[in-house]
Image (tube, rainbow, N blue to C red; front, top):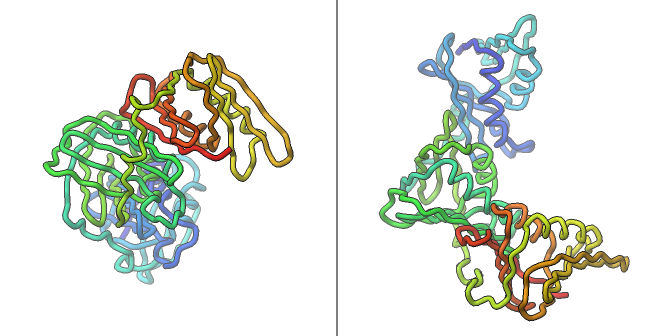
Length: 369
């Protein structure tokens, strides 16, 4: 096996697949990258046994073969080489990988390609199409609400619901919820629901671009796969039942307390007040009154913060508490300059939407004051 390639051309696929590598692996081969040369193309594959990325690049000077090399060492070597350098990769009879560039020489130990874990075949496959930029939008709007290492494993990911005329993304950690949908013809006849694990969602958000090009997604009961430009993304799915999120989304029409205001002004007010909120609970108190919104926080050191905003509100007075971090993240994600907020009472969840739209909904549960 041998190939010669420009350093810049080589680095592009290497840096793409690097994101899936873990610093600590239970299996030595998972710290390695599969390097394959076939039909005038090089492919570089990395996996953590849950998410797999394969990036391809064309090459003129090559001899076929495949091997696995220590991924981070290989990437670090290529990054340390001077710009516009030529990189020669060759496998010797002892299965040592030799990398040469100018007067630099490196020899890396390898593990046979047969030991590299292969992607499972997708079971009960369903294919659907969606614009790449729209899938990115759905993920960007909802990923912040995913749980982190929750014992309820089905919350540590993103729910994708695919229907004949709609795609919906949902994430929740049990305290907040984000829902976004897109009305589009998907090409499926029957609805399909999958839960993509957190790491797969984060890698997808990094890979997807704002290009308005159609993307074919292959989804099964065990895995999801798609090709984005020259990168093949594969991820196992979470096998679990996502909660019935529809029951916790307040009905905007039934909320008797509504206000619309400048999103950034509210976000900055919350950021200022959060400085003196409790490190443990992060509680902030919102007090709605005629024409004003008062934002207040305190902490165990008996320090206090208070901020007041002028708003258009003529409903009944209301005092309600929230985790300020949840509100700030929701407002930072909201895709409009004006935010619509719907409330009922101090023990009911808050509904946050872009002004005049319902294709994106954020729900935050209240906290006791």
